[in-house]
Image (cartoon, rainbow, N blue to C red):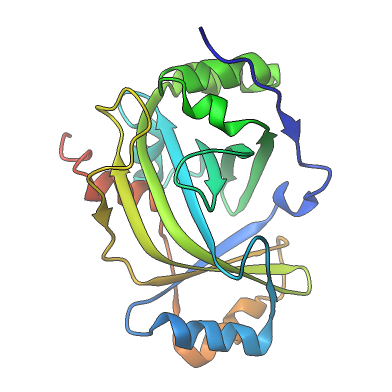
Length: 241
């Protein structure tokens, strides 16, 4: 029987999630400490449970990996769906149900807090979209009906910074866990990423591109990079045409 969930919409508390631009920078030849030092000189660290967050997200998709392939194809309008939690191996306290959307240069995120993540973690993975469907606003039903397949768990370490209304995240130590053949959530057979250190800047649309100035000493370059797509590639899910 599918667990009953209660979702708490966080959009009122996090207006910055609703509409923004995101720019990602890769630093293939710079170590984490050097990137951290540059960010600390320009921006203020944000500390949550600790200075470094351990982020884990389970990504869902359709059987043909349509969301992944839409990203690879560069489609201007697309969505992806994940369940995320922090600083635990498995969901234990709260976790978050997120639908991230893109419409050309604009992006945003619908984010719902899910109290009692441990109850969800005990359910088979196929039940997660069903439980979320029952609790989520009706406008998300078509997406949840379509994206029933648990594909991968993405794990990484993240540090947070802010500069005015812009937020920077420093991501590293990426790992990917296969889930397509898994009935339940298990952290086994991880693939480590060969990706460089990453910085994401989230800012208002049409901002002053302060991220370019902040990161100039490191020589970083804007890149297209999706952790979910990289997971599918590293785990061998995109070998089929």
